[in-house]
Image 1 (cartoon, helix red, strand yellow):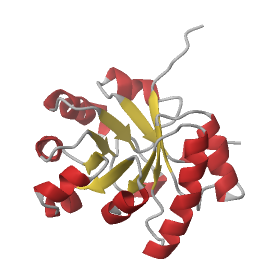
Image 2: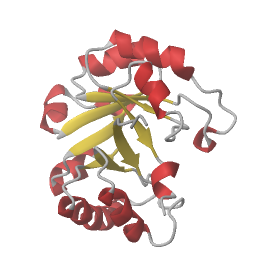
Image 3: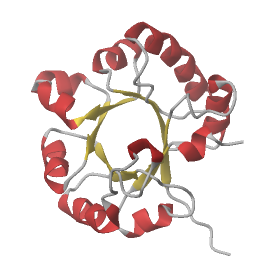
Length: 190
């Protein structure tokens, strides 16, 4: 029997969580993902901060890095271990502001964007969506060939996202991805 191991990042979505969100986070971090990205885009800054403090404590207890999504000032204020930004937000920050951020990840959707993210100083990129996903209903996936092109175009780790589960994660690794990001797989973990 072959055991497949790859670097997996959990991307949260409390609307998909099975039961209490913080209990779900405890289950997730017990599986030791490479990191947890607290996404929760629909929360106000204050609500996100209150939730982030609780999630960071859970992650810290299991030694799982907690990254924030799209909230650079808050990431610095609370001492998040990383930050995931859309390319447009990363581009809008000046060099000094980007250099003050913890481990910077940038979300991209093309080869040109991946190269741009690398030039902006990203520590890693998240590329997608690779497979069909309910998060992008009706939008055609970019596919494994496009993922492979992106992976060959940059010298930083590429994490694939979009419709990824245990059954297809290995295809992303075979295409050159350093790891994968999963949402439903983690949020629906029993």
